[in-house]
Image (cartoon, rainbow, N blue to C red; front, side):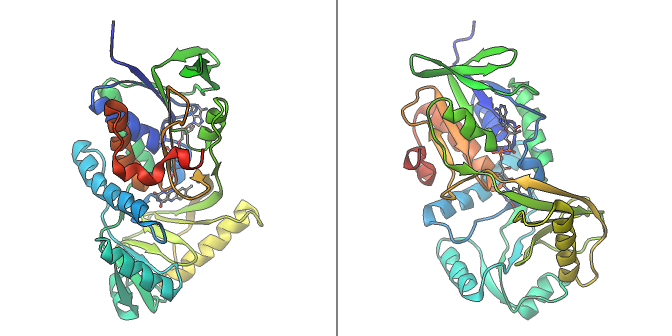
Length: 353
Ligand SMILES: Cc1cc2nc3c(=O)[nH]c(=O)nc-3n(C[C@H](O)[C@H](O)[C@H](O)COP(=O)(O)OP(=O)(O)OC[C@H]3O[C@@H](n4cnc5c(N)ncnc54)[C@H](O)[C@@H]3O)c2cc1C
């Protein structure tokens, strides 16, 4: 007989994994249910750049900056997590926006400064044509997203989280207006609280309980080359593509996908852009895939108790890699204590639900 409330987390991407891990660390009784394989859908195809973001409202930037610090804390608690704190060189915005961005972020306490062409060349000697003006953000970094989600899941399992894979939640179970679990093809699973962290699948499940979540999942390209000798010192955020070199030496590039050409053509164009960006070109691609980014329509996370629906909590967000350790800790804390940290103010579900 166990009198601790049973919490069911739906979705084993980086967001669900981080929430389940923090709940378990705080002593909760947790089951995580995943439709497919552990490690997520968006997560495994993410560039996984950890960053403060630009052009966002101050409360949201503060949450992101807080999340960057939370990655250091989490990597200390789960030693198999490695964050590469390489910094980033960014010039994917016009010069006036770069200047405003650097000034605003510096005023908010994020390390970010403008650099000229000579300094950009010194920071990233592999660039074929360094930008005239860029922002260097030394506090940014990246993780290997799939390995990190799997590390969290393995540690969550060690702490007693039950992880059920290959079993989609088909609907929320409801009784007297309250969510009491989920329905699956092989039966119902009961819970005192259901946390929807199902990425692009969150809105459909929430809709079944009468909660409309305006979330899109636009496609994006991710290209990984064969491994090569170290070329980059940090992340490179250029107008045509965002780029990092992973722990195995692969160049990993992401770019938007407008759907006007097929995947093969778009992948070739991305490879051409990558080869133009680097002085010595780039190795052959190992894979080019389409990922989808679950993103609330106003760009801000939706994280919190579902308005007017007892027993349901939702967590759907973009930049889920950047935000995972902060969201994981803050959600676990809100569920445990009933108190909502002011850092979550920009994530309030009632603003759009
Ligand atoms: C190309 C690309 C580049 C990106 N770059 C960055 C970046 O640089 N920095 C950054 O911070 N973010 C980036 N993102 C976004 C980031 O990857 C996502 O915000 C994050 O991975 C979302 O994690 P998640 O756990 O919410 O979703 P997912 O990883 O999609 O996980 C959701 C899980 O829920 C499961 N699920 C869905 N429906 C159900 C159901 N009915 N029942 C059970 N399980 C269900 C899915 O199978 C999946 O495993 C990028 C995304 C892409 C695609």
